[in-house]
Image 1 (cartoon, one colour):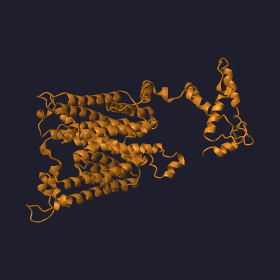
Image 2 (image 1 turned 45 degrees about the horizontal axis):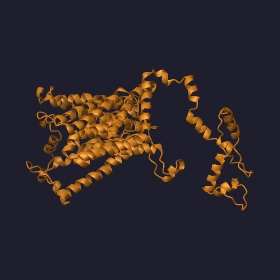
Image 3 (image 1 turned 90 degrees about the vertical axis):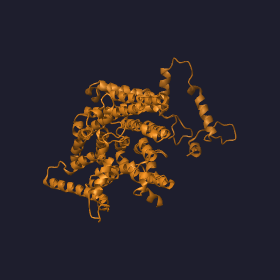
Image 4 (image 1 turned 90 degrees about the horizontal axis):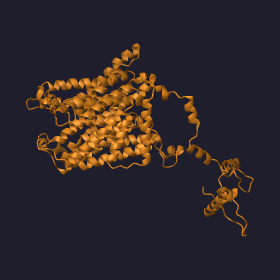
Length: 611
């Protein structure tokens, strides 16, 4: 309690508080809030996005699967959890740089979970939770336009009946009342707190205005630092927008550009919200996550007073979409962590940066191997090349900073290059999320034009290739079979892109005939599956050969009549080896005292074979 009191002291705490007890208090509170708010929200959303909850009892697994083997749905669920909970950027900022970002992000994710429920009581609860997240950290404004557009669409659904039109107004009022009451409860202490200029504790706005000035420091100017956004990129020579445009005009320009960039996602979310009753909670949740990622990227790139840590706002919803867009999510997570490098160097977190990235990539490498047949990793061509090239440039910048000394007149050369490259990559990410949002919301057109849906997701395979590039540069080794599989996947996808839609969507008779031809491994498997011994011969003391085996052997012999080497079946070599093996394990025994031939009987097998 003493540590809490000193941490919250009104004036003395402004000069810093370095007591060990206070540090312990802060570390434990971050960890506890991370577990109870952020991790619980990820668990709840993962249950929906993975399609099926993870098995909870051993009986459920053993009913259809061997022991210690989990189903594909469990693997998808576990992969989603690990990807979201091992995000290097979140771990390094909250537990290294030390902040409470996961608290506000967890409240926002919980609000998304409730907002996408079929019953409208869910959006009401979600609006309260999002209000708490917004008041906990003002950067949740990045998600606010997407949330507002989606909830507004849910209030005014496209149902042409009078009862629905009346209930739409009631829904809108219910959301408005819940938000206003939440804000009133949280802001009331600032309005009634006694001031030195006032003799009483009556309601006043001076305290609220003081809070707003600190939340939105317009007097500090547009630029926060070397952040990977549009305004910093424009301030670098030869553009130098900072010296060409008046300081009072820049905030208005930032507001206008931000509104233009968030408009597409907001319009699509509003339209989707109107039709939300037609879709499942999973579909609604995916669209809301993509929309919130798009608007938050727009704020990060174009808004006022952006900090490097603002990239965590789009990262949180995108990390939960790894099952839908695995390559892009892995690539974006790596780029977001890489963009924080200048800040992490100041905090002496270089070793933690490398370790967190390696752990994250190893987890996704293992998941890609397990789910390679279940999750579609590969899908297009040009964007993948750009992503792979970006990863090479990122690694080259790391090597250059390590080995090359910047010139004396350019001391900030590498931080500037970091921000310029990061701005370009985040702009590409904004385009990808907005385009994906368009394909998600335009469901009716996608169903009538299948090729359009395939083209809408065409970028995903290339981001997975970029992921392999990061793993390779980090020292991860892959087998030759993995490289061969990836090569065939790229060749197959590129061949599909080169053809017309009718070439591969409509099967021909030639395709069907080729599909009926057994491959070499299928023929061998069919041959190996044929029984040799007839174990169903009850009345026979000896086990005869299975029906048809002699015919198959004769057919094989007739086709190989030019072979002069005698088959092991003919000279009895295989039977002698089998007999010795059966004697070794105790199945075939000689119960007679004399030297009579040993017999492999049905009774002996039933009595001796291990169960």
